[in-house]
Amino acid sequence: MKITIKTIILLFALSASAGCANREFEVKEVVTLEATGYCRCQKCCGWKRNFLMQPVYAYGAMEGERKKLGITASGSKAKPGRTIAADTSVFPFGTKLKVPGYGIGIVEDRGGAIKGAKIDLFFRTHKQALEWGRKTVTVEVLLP
Image (cartoon, rainbow, N blue to C red; front, top):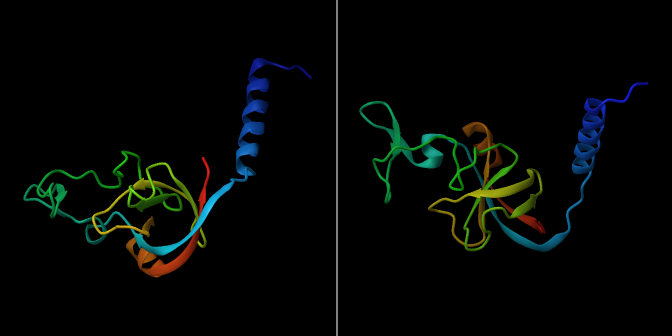
């Protein structure tokens, strides 16, 4: 068998990704809080279309300014099963939370109605967000 640099890189990449998939996180603390679902729609994210049919903020300090749909407050693209919105004075950006029924997510967003012990979980569709609804959950805050 001929071993090339390409083979070594491939084997290294496969072993590294396998290690990440099985990686266990250490729990920093366990908290009980209220979790609701949201998506990128107008109703969930407070935007509307202006006369040019561009999405703009519907209210608040940025009312009327252009809104990038699906982009979080931290600047990342929102991903279902991963993106969590929280009060960043409680859970700063980058905090990993293990939410029963949702998985391990990362705080990448915030919202005007999210204060204190509340989180919003990002879903692909409004229907999925409504199906999640509003639940009291016991969440594990994970160490980085």
